[in-house]
Length: 135
Image (cartoon, rainbow, N blue to C red):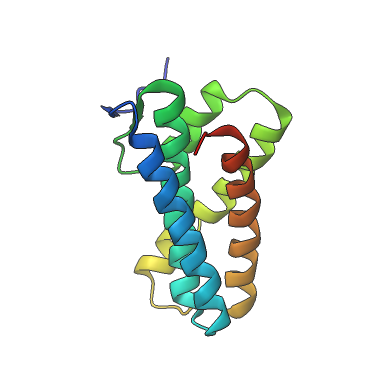
């Protein structure tokens, strides 16, 4: 049985907007870390990754995930990303996105260690996006 994920068409150039958002969220995460605002840093990392995946999918396919589950976007990206670099980058993205529920909805604060770990994974993912999506 094939996994069916709801998709949304995207304008040809909208990948640039998603790329810019991804970069801005990443910069925001870095600034939040400097301020020891670990929850804001973690949330910015999550949104940086989401926008980065949207940029990649839009650039490569003209569509992006419309699923409520953000891990579905990683599944879609894995269907078109075949290099070892891509597989590694998407593992970094997944490591960030699996924290989404905890960061956004649970009654726990993000530790400095967790925020730094998420930032590291986000940074590695963003470097891959920068190498594969034209500005």
